[in-house]
Structures are given as structure tokens and as C-alpha cells.
Amino acid sequence: MMEIRIDKVKLSKLPQTDLTKIPFGRVFTDHMFIMEYKNGSWQNARIEGVRSIPMHPANLTLHYGQSIFEGMKASKNEDGVPLLFRADMHAARMNASAKRMCMPTIDPALFVEAVRQLVSMERDWIPGDEGSALYIRPFMFATDEFLGVAPSESYVFIILTLPVAPYYSHPVKLLASTDYIRAAKGGVGEAKTAGNYAASLLASKEAKQKGFDQVLWLDGRDFKYVQEVGTMNIFFVINDKVITPPTDGAILKGITRDSFLHILKDKGYAVEIRPISMDEVVEAYQNDQLQEVFGAGTAAVAVDVQQIGYKDHLIELNPRKDSLAQLLKKEINGLRSGKIEDRYGWTEPVYEVENV
Image (cartoon, rainbow, N blue to C red):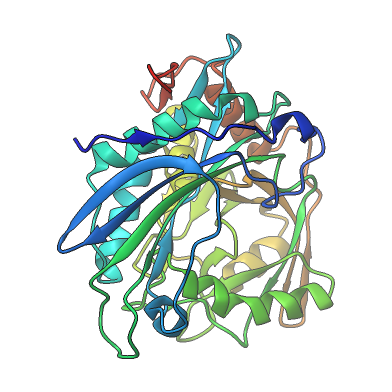
């Protein structure tokens, strides 16, 4: 494996940072991992201080959008040891996004080792409050300097880390959009690429103007079948059955989603992975059969849905403190903190790395 060079900052920002008051996504740790792809291979892997990246105005990413990313978390167990959660799956999904966007893949072992060394260095940045964590943002973008619709021949891969509090502190309200789509089969909905999120901004802005928190995306053909929410996958509980749409190429293969499916099946819940239409959701609600709706994602973990707006319908739910979403959230947070035995082999302790 490529050696990772370490260049520590001389003065940390941590003493001036209040980890109990953290706006999500705005406070960064001292260091980042970075390496470049040139002449057909990754090179110059290193950890150094967070800094600005110089960029030519003809950078291909700025014009044609070759950019992908991942979202991970590290938390601490009761002994103060950082834990990674399903890092191998994040490496695999990063490479799946890279292939779809015609970008170079990264050796999964190098990906995980880079995360491990960076988290080891920034362990003191991990907040201690339950539900808080060190958010890990690996991302890659093109760096060729020319104006032409073609894959770049050079790239930069970076990993940032930042302390975060829980993403949602209350149940959410969703607006099922019948005007905009997130993705269609054959598109790039399955990839974590920047353009997917840029395309969602207008629909999200309009949803918030109407009093909702997020968009519930429907299929791009008939605006009928549920896909996912802007920041997470979606689950419905109808007649004691947990239903979630299949990842058919237009839906992100959520790692929290996959974890929930394992946990639910192990706990004996009836789970169905199948298309579900908004007509079915509305009918279940009108017949008092819609028991619960919740989202699943790395940032949110699990969050109850309080309302869904769809055409002339307003579905109003009354999330319980003992909801299935809260049970699953407690399970994931318990695994991430080491309070619940990891029967799946999903967590990995990050011990202090020599010379780091």
C-alpha cells in the first residue's frame, strides 16, 4: 500500500472550539488527507493542515461536474476509542460512484487506511454527546484545465473531518414533488455525485417556502412511485410491515438503509423491499393502516416523519417516543458507541497510529 506522509499543524484550533455548540458542516478539524491522480495512478498520499485548494478557472469540474463524495461518521466508545462504522461499504460505494462518473477508483484498503489515520489524528475532535460524531467527508474532483466535454485525466482526492451534532432534532415534514424529479433509471441517481444535489436545490427551496423540511422524490416517469428523500432513504410501516423502495438505479444505496434492513430482519420484523406508490400511502393513511414513516441516512441516522404533503392530501402522523425509527436510531448509536454488541462486524476501532 502507498505510504501516507504526515505533516502535522503546529497549532490546533481545538482549544478555541466549543464542541457542544457546533453548526452542522461549518466547523472543520485541523487536518485533511489528500492525494493526486496523474499519469494513470494515485500518488503523493499525505495528511496535512486544512487549506484552500488553488484552482484554474478552466478546471473541468467547474464546467462539467466530475465530482463525487461520501459521508461517514466516527464516534467514541466508552473507553474513548474512536469507532468507524462500515468503512468498507463506504469505500465500495465511492468506487461505484467513480465508475459511473468515469473517474478513477481508489484501492479500498488505502481508502480505509487514510480514514483510519486521519481519525486517529483528530480523535480529540469527536464530541462526547450521544448522537454527535466526527463526520468524515471523502470526495474527488477533476482537475484538468480545458473546456471540453470529456473525462479528466487528473483528479484530487481529499478527506475532510468535522465535528457534528445530530442532523435532525425533531420529526420532519416532507413534500412529495410532482413538479421536479431527482433521478431516473439510467441516470446518475445511484451515484453520490455533486450534480444530484445541485439539481435538488430549487425543489427543496420551494418545499421550505411551503412549510416543509425536505422533498420526498417520486419516480421520473409518472410521479407516482416513491424514491427517496433529499438527505436519506425512506421507510413506511403499513399493517406492521416495513416497506422501502428497491435501489433500482435511481435510488442511492444507503448504508444506513442496508444496516436497518439487517437489524429489522434479525429482530423479526416483516420487511418488504418493493415499489410503493403515493396512492398506496394515501390509502393506507385514510384506512388508519399507515403506522409510521421514517428516513434513514448517515447524517440523520433515523428521523420520524410528521407530515407528507402530496397533491391535495396532507398526511399527518403522530410520531411516538418508542417509534421504530427511534428503536433503530438507538441501535445504530449503540453500535457506534460500543454500548451494544456488534454481532455484524460493522464497527472498527481506531487505535493511535504510530508516529501520528
